[in-house]
Amino acid sequence: SELGMINTPYFSAGYYYNYLLQTETFPTTWTRKGGVPTVVANNAIAPTMIAAAETIAGGTSSDGGIGQYVTSAVKGTWTFSVWLKSTTTPANTEIYLKIMAVNTNATTTIATSTVLINPNWTRYSVTMSDSSTHTRKWVEINNGTNQIVAWGAQLEPLPTPSVYSGALTTTAVTSLTG
Image 1 (tube, one colour):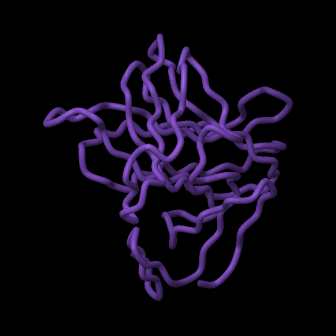
Image 2: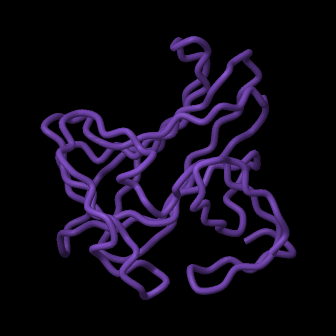
């Protein structure tokens, strides 16, 4: 945790940003890909101990997952983070987190992180440094053919995840001091 921040799923304090929309409601503004049939809303217990987490079904191919475009041409270092857990025990599930800078549907910069998620809630992240000209960013949770549970996604112009800030509106940006 950064100096001056307290960051847990139960309590957070400090500076935060979130450029994503509906960060705790993945069936809404998130796009399914790779044959992911459904994202079931509020059917799992989130790290906050309430039924607010989403089950993301496995896709029909290795590129199955969900993602979201964000309109932002801001260059620099960006971090995408999300709380995840697998639905199988005790095996770990390999997934990919991705963040891309996109200009007129052509990717200019891409960062991908392979993570092994387990049955315990953990916040995972991927960071991208970008100096290219672009108009949007794309973030993605690629779970392939594996079913997983997700809660609390965040995209911010920082080198590491900061205090989690849920964005429950349909317009970005959340940027405040908690």
